[in-house]
Length: 407
Image 1: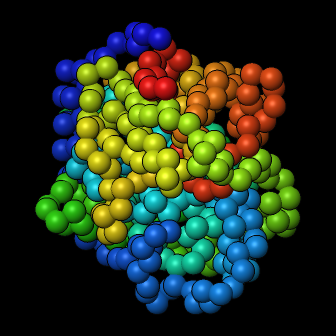
Image 2 (image 1 turned 180 degrees about the vertical axis):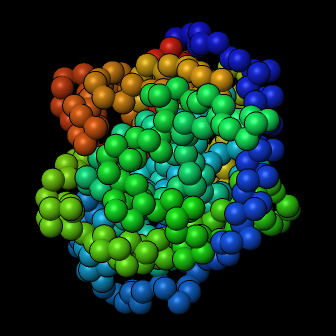
């Protein structure tokens, strides 16, 4: 396949710099009003919110999100909760990230101007203790559609979002809205009745220091304020609990009753694993800082991530980001749709996909019937694909994107 979309490279860089400066000015004022530790599957740091797990306790409870097995102690924690979905930025200044290796599922798509953004879904793996997730950033409309798959009202953590805002005019009034109506994420949250304390919204602007801090030196060197927000999973769930947001949806029914989990299988034995590696793709022409590359480790049956030509690591543990399943979801990409370089993606409908697991590649299809409907992946025979237990990483790209891999 040949990548054909326009790059808007120079204008995107200029706009990004302007937006960064403006955001820094705004966030600097707010940070004075809002006043870490992470764990992951191979390296565990304890803190006051970690739960005690007997090493001999059986792992006989399957996670509905990632299919992995956990203890009854862990299951007892997540059974009282709904999923926590967090928006995480991916500009070079955001790296290394915190907490992506504790998400059960990760989504990645362009936010604007060729710059990608992540959305982590936290539920089972985060049940055993506090996870610092950073840097938390703003939301885009299509991420809301994917978040809606995890119950009607998952806890939704972010720092603002695309909205109908214009520049302040010399007379003090606001100028015309610059954001395309279809890209207005904050207005969409209002429409879906998610916004603030009346819904399931955990916007940093409304929650503040109860669950977020601003750490301008989180990477060891000063970064602009918009790259500094750390969210803490235990505190975010605690705010949700204060607002009455438990495992029960607005109708008083456990959210899992309507949730459709993917199907899972056991890992292929090493002798049956393939050698399709590496897998790489660009999200946008000319933006090599966001090129994703996955190297398959046959021994551990995992895909290890590099971004922009460098190994992508977790800030606290120094562990390379990895996934058990890597999904490339191909769909219609529209945009930029406005002067702010916002993008749109077709999220509801169907299309092509590639699923990488066990060192092999599956030519797949995806379908999603509604905003609240689950995205389902099937093979060429129409059979639903079974994923390996563990993290699934979904990269969303335009249908014309070239996906490179070696057999």
